[in-house]
Structure formats: structure tokens, C-alpha cells
Image (cartoon, rainbow, N blue to C red; front, side):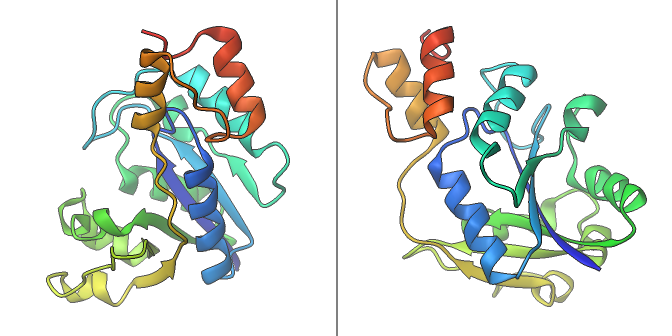
Length: 195
């Protein structure tokens, strides 16, 4: 079975913190690939500022030189609220030769039991909890069906966020070196996130 990481998010925009997280998960779980899955409508976050085509384009630019990373756009094609269980079921049907690992930040691990059909989801994937320094994956209150399907991966500190990039754009401040250069240039050229 081919070991594949799934990394969902709005990626609004993608930045080096996302890439570092995916690489940390890939290395820790010995994944063959990591697929970045841009969310259409996130169930637990505000609606993205950039439209779905723009976010997909930025991902393609960011991942172009990384052979182990690619964009999987099934949530954009499906539209509606992007529930992880629906995405995983669709991918398992399309790719029965793969074993999937869902990558999630340590801050989201405690919320896994609240995800739609979390028990079924835990039967279908292994979760990779990304731990930043000072933010361990606290599994003490997790139900056993999630605790036994949780791997931990550590990642170096990197205080980047899409929110900060968007805020900097609105304030006219630099965000250079926070994203891959092609993403930076595309955002600048198209005036994205300026208002």
C-alpha cells in the first residue's frame, strides 16, 4: 500500500509554514506523497477571502518544484461544506491501493472527536498530529478510537500564518520570504488581499 498524507486547509494563502508541516509529516510517517486539499467551505473556520480558483493556483505555484507534494482538488470540485469524512471516503474509493494519513495541527487534535463521523474517520485514516515546541498533542481526553490512531510528528518553530499575511497586505507591509517566491509574485501582481 502506498502511504499518502492528506493535508486539508483553506491555504489562503499557502506559506512556508504549511510546506514545513507537510514535510515534517512526510518524514515522520515515511509517506510517499502528501496531497494538499484546498477546502471549499470549511466547517469550522470563516469563509476564505480568496476564491477557490485563486487558492488552487497559489498551491500549484508553491508545489511545482516538490515532487512529493501535489494538489488534490476534489473538495473544490464537490463544492459545499468540506467534511473530512466525505473527502476520505471519496479518495479511498478512487485509490484503493493507498493508505491515508490525515495531517492536523496539535491545536486541532483535541477537536477530532467533534469532527463529523469521527469514529468512521478514525477507522479509515491515521492522524498525524503536528507538534510545535510548547504545543504537544494532548491526548488525555481523547477517546480510545482516536488515541490509538494518532501519530505525533514534531516540527520546528515557525510563526507564520495566512491570517498574518493577509493582515500585512491590508496594512501595506511586506510579506516577502513568508511564501514561495512564485506565490509572492502572483499575489503582488494580482493585488490579492489588498483590501
